[in-house]
Amino acid sequence: MYYLEPKKDHRTQSTRENIEVSSAGLLQDIVQHYDDCYSTYSYWCNEDNLAYHYGYWDSIEPYDHHQSLFNMNAYLYEKAGIKPTDKVLDAGCGIGGSSIWMAKNHHNKVTGITLSAKQVEHAQKNAQRHHVSDLTHFEVADFCATPFADESFDIVWALESSCYALDKSAFLKEAYRLLCKGGRLVIGDAFMLQRELNEQQWQAVVAFYNGWAVPNLCMRDEFNQYLIDLKFQNIQIRNINEQIRPSAKYIYKVTKRFFFWGKLAKCLGACPRMSTLASHIKAPEKI
Ligand SMILES: C[S@@+](CC[C@H](N)C(=O)[O-])C[C@H]1O[C@@H](n2cnc3c(N)ncnc32)[C@H](O)[C@@H]1O
Image (cartoon, rainbow, N blue to C red; front, side, top):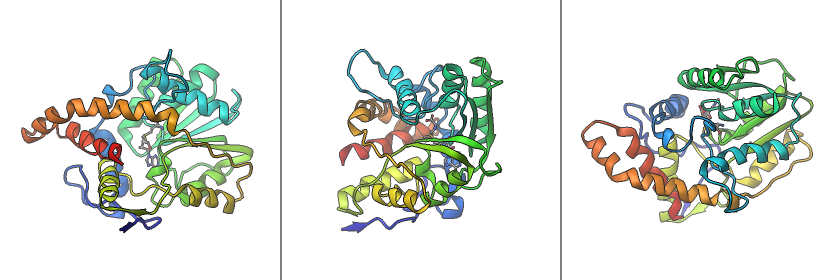
């Protein structure tokens, strides 16, 4: 039996080149992962949704993959009761997908932060292309220690990003500080439901952590407790496993297709990132 200790960096190796695994190197590993995988993500999102997240499927038809990525934004927006006048912090904004979607569809003012300067550049260009530069602002910042004043935002939005915090409560504490009275935090992310893992589960989970540069996933109940301890109110948790399952299957299918060619390319020193992504995406499917 293996035991996943809380707040610990469980990566055993970096699949990025020349990056050592240490908690001190975690942020660098995350940046490297996203910068290296930029072109690989073009097999996942398109120029409209720019989404580095799973889709939300509440019916098989009429959605397609790209529509499901938009649907995830729409789902969270609606669940959090966001209004067009709300100022939003997109914490871990990727290349700007959700920020641009909110600005374009609802005219929200959105600040997007990410660790990667390259992602900021992409997000700015994408916002320009979508004619929402006036409503969006992107910058490099750590969502656990941002440069913004207390109560700067009505909404903190974290879609598949809070999992990157070594200590999830540090992220939540910062989010609480940034929210004005009546503000809301909306998170779409992956959580663990058990700490004890058998050999096969452990291998799969560590492969996932290594590949995505994620230090750990939080237990859902612990996350809930952090929210309570920080005095968040009206906490609502929804399990959307079923709604994201088609995306999980899709990502597996896509990366499997590239697995062989990625491995070959890596051997030839041509495109090491493709197989990196494929090899660790493969594992969680087996759990
Ligand atoms: C899976 S991507 C999700 C991007 C975006 N939310 C989306 O749905 O398209 C994770 C993002 O979190 C960002 N991130 C990870 N750790 C972060 C941190 N400590 N501070 C700010 N951003 C972070 C990464 O740089 C990346 O942009």
